[in-house]
Image (cartoon, rainbow, N blue to C red):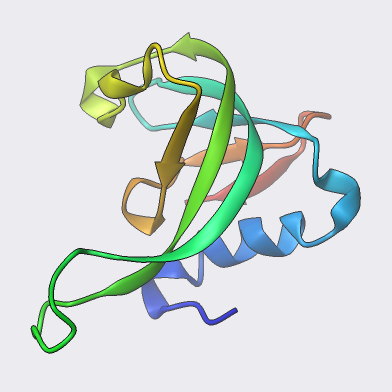
Length: 112
């Protein structure tokens, strides 16, 4: 998979961790800077874009990660996730990537 310069320090390490199939059903603790904390399982990753036409100079492609929410521990609207409450799935990319991701054993596996 190709990663943009913006994804090299965030999306790439997380996807590399996920590429080992033994982690396919693992729960992750996702933490954002203002205190939003969610436990979730990985569902899929996909190429995505910002919705602009390809010939637009602001067009951008990136990788999005889809997660299945298991528990919302805390939501802080400043993190931009007030909309996840009541949903089963949510998506993030390099722009709204968690500041920290821990695996089910409490090991830090990705940091923004």
